[in-house]
Image 1 (tube, rainbow, N blue to C red):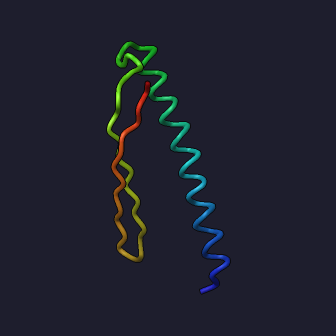
Image 2 (image 1 turned 135 degrees about the horizontal axis):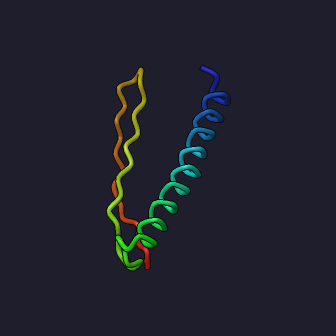
Length: 68
């Protein structure tokens, strides 16, 4: 295994996940506030599940996203 290629690939994937996830969360929250489903002061439970085929990895991160 080429460690440099592996490390670069993992970082690229995680950057894509982070940027895309942030955009989707922001969009969903703004739409929910505009539609009156949220007030804008809530704390929303969040969960991210990472799976990696070929090595049987399933990893879950739980947390909260505070709106204000």
